[in-house]
Length: 588
Image (tube, rainbow, N blue to C red; front, side):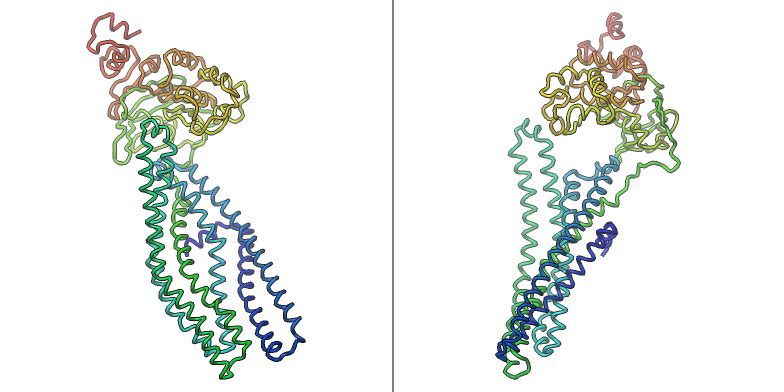
């Protein structure tokens, strides 16, 4: 019942009222099914049997009017249900999307994209199906069965008991089926999620698949998930087919009992032909709800499994949120300090006792082997993750005391994983600041060495970028991402391997532009290239999550550690070269 309460609590007042009115109409029209059989019985007894044509026209008009009104009311009911549920689930879908938008990175590390898409679309739509269709179908079935049973009892309790004798057996069968089938629907939901995840990953990574000629392998992998989903569906159908013959046989018994026993009671003059007509014309009102039980149980169980998945996301809340006593920082300066910071991810230590300080307007270079924790430093600064111990400070204030909106707005990042939206180039550059003028967009593109190739594109800055930047080279995407980061005029500018796909000449041009920005900002440059960080005010070398070396380019060259080895390797200098000329070259 919790899932149903959740739906009801998240339906607005107007939609609730519309839904309740629709349910009332459903109830009225279900009971109204008795009118025409009743009028038909009068027609048989008082017109056909009595051979009296006088009430014929009024009775026929009554039958037609009752049927027309019922159909009209049913039409209104369906329209009201659709309007009510569509409005409710449009709001729910928005709230779920908003919940996902404000989730922390750990959440997306846990949940697969395909699974989240299934919850946001298929699962939510199945919940709507329950509210818009299953709800009134259940009400129809209950009222149809109960009102018909009462009507039958008023006519002939003996014939009613004979017809309804199979009901306890049907209820027992459906109860057993309901308990057995639920785990299968949960498993089916998981198989669907796995299949959608496989499809999403393959579509997103189609270029990699083609580059390695792995189409056949990926088809096989998807086929495996597809067949697993099919097998689970078949198991559910097999379970239903095991009980369906028994349900159908018992339902048909009602019709047979009505015909044979009804004829016997007419001979015994216990009922009239018109009353028997009521039984024969309404026997389906008893048997159909029984027939529908299995289908309704399937729908309800699927609703339960889908609702559980939706509710799990709906009530999930991020741990990284604004504190009630968060301090307001309307004008961030960019003074960064890490104090004895340690951080672990899934029991794997990433950073250990890291301390450094970058004053306002200075440039920090970070270099180190893959997996040493370079990008993690930026993630902790922006509070995408929280430290396990130690403190991260911006402008002398612990980032935990910042308002997240202000903190992240103060940091402009061009990361190693470039993501561009399916929008114009202008829209991508102005993503962080929609108030930018066309001239400002062009200026930032020029500073990122992007203006030249953008001008050669078919529609210039209005060229639509394909999904994830399809159609652009790696270097072009990096330059647009850099322009996007510059466009917000951040207090802290983060360049995480931003120039890895650029040639040396373009990289040099960008470094010159970064040194002459029209606004003051602190820069963090993360790179594998010594040429990208050599002009930084301070360079730190990370190894195994610790700061192994620290200093300026000249100081690190003299230390002859990891930095020197990287410099020597990238400049074709023997690592053991020890001449004065070699050292002077290194210093330069």
